[in-house]
Image 1 (cartoon, each protein chain N blue to C red):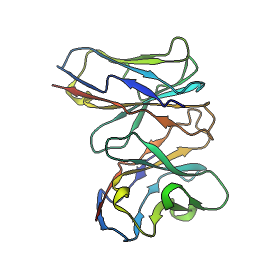
Image 2: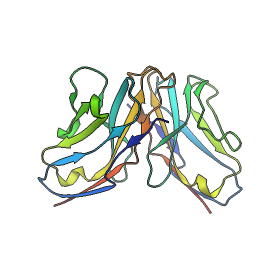
Image 3: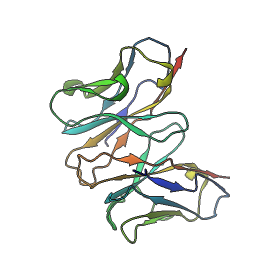
Length: 115
Length: 115
């Protein structure tokens, strides 16, 4: 079965620290990859996405992610976090060729940034 | 542009009762998705509509869950009868079409508590 693993359940950082959230997915076929963010009290929003081309993708608010096909990974990074980055982050995969184009989500990583 | 609308935002029922959730997608979006997000997990797709037709309902517990999108616009998800394990946030999302390049936009969700 298709699955997405996010290794960190809760990450606590001080402001200005660097962030890396891990995401690994199963299956070796063609995939589309996404990171969604849910700020407290708000709905899920797309942070960035990868379909093809340059494996290093840049998203909103200074976030970036790198697709490493050999490792089935799509880790999210930010060089310097801010208190406003406190949120829950979800990695999601869509397996190309699946007719429904459904997203398979990881369990999420809660990020708490301490001022 | 208005986002995806959902109602109610919260619902508390007792087990074996029935409940219905409503979703109005972004205007012009042909594809509508219902997801279930249990506490501590990522969203899981329940059903996907393309206009008023079902594309994927493979993860919908059809013995108690039903959904419709009669006119290809808004949609209703029903649970009858509810079980304790149905306690979750029910998310509606929409996209312009069902092709893999279209971003899914999420609504605020309906938080269901089954007592």
